Structures are given as structure tokens and as C-alpha cells.
Figure 1 (cartoon, one colour):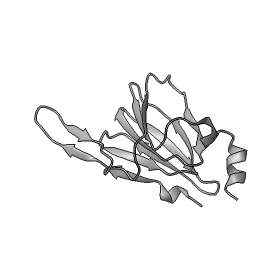
Figure 2: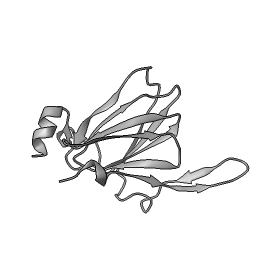
Figure 3: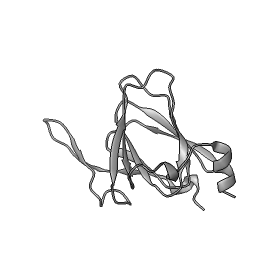
Figure 4: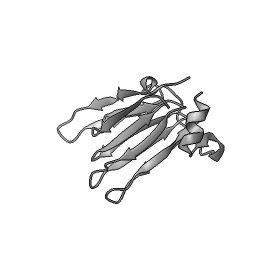
Length: 134
């Protein structure tokens, strides 16, 4: 049974250069094989994203620009992680509820996922999520 303690921050390679920095995400940088990449942007003030859990899928979230909070819940504990550096991402394991909130103006959230979109992998009701953890 996964807990919020199984999700962790991962620093990815940052190449410093006077012309601008470069970071690279390759399969050895994160603990799963990438199958899908998407990003969230133009999020209205006060809006929240997420509000679900995955049965099998893992995700790696990075604030490419700006900042936002990720609230992680495992049915017993909760923790909030602030993402605000483009070379540090949050690995969220399967079986963890996530909510994204407090997006700064111009924030961009990159999501690297371990699988393609499959609606049957989502748990979108928190009560159902909590009962799945027992």
C-alpha cells in the first residue's frame, strides 16, 4: 500500500551556461518509463487541478515556470509540496490522491506520465479513493 512518503522530490540535471541553463529529463532521470507528456498553463487565479488518484500510473511534475502547490493524500496523512524550480520535480507514485493549487501568474506545470491516458486508471471520487486504501 503506497503512502505519501513514497512520493519524493527528484533533482534533474542542470547544465549551467552563461547563455542560459539547460535541464534534461531522460528515462534514467526518473524511476519509470515515460509514455506521455502534457502541461498545464493559463490556469485562472484560484483554480485547482488534479483532484484524483491513479491505480497504476506514476507521474513526475515540474514547475517549468512560476510555482504551485501539490497536496498529496494517502487516506491517512497529507502533505503539501511547493514546486518552484524547473530542475526539481515531484515523483507521485500510484495510489496517491493529488490536488494542485495556488498557481502563480504564468505558472506552467509539466507532467511526465508512465502511461497513456486511460480513464479506467483514474479514481476521481475521494470517498472511493479512501475505501480503495483499506
